[in-house]
Length: 168
Image (cartoon, rainbow, N blue to C red):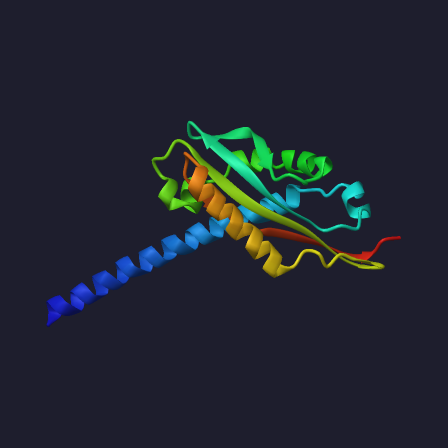
C-alpha cells in the first residue's frame, strides 16, 4: 500500500514537472511575442494607406544561428519590412529550443511568424482581412512548406496589431 502511494506521489511530481515545462515553453513564446510587439514600430505611411496587411515573416536558423535576413511574403510594404529589421536582436536572443522543443539538436530550420496589421478607424474600415482569410492563408503556407522545404518549419502564434482611432 505504501509503495503504491509513494509511486502515485512520484508520478504526480513528474506529471507536474512536465506541465510546468509546457507552460514554460508557452511563457517563453509569450515573452518573445511581447518583445517583438514592443520593438515593432509601424511607419506612418503604412498607417496612412488605410489598408490592412497580413504577411508571414520567415526567420531562418542556419548552423544554429538566426540569420540577419528575414523573408517576407510578396505584397509586404518595404517600410514594414524595415520595421521588422529592428526586431533582429530580439529574434537572435530568443530561446528557440525552449519555444520549440522539437528543434533541439537541429542546426537548420525555419520559423514562421504570422503578422497582421488591421484598421478600425473612423472613415477607414478595411474589412478585406478576416480571421477566416488569415486561417486560409496560414493553411496554404503550411501545405506549401511541407511539400517543398528541405528544412523543418515551426510556427509562432500570430502577432496582430490594430490601429484604432481617427485618421486625421
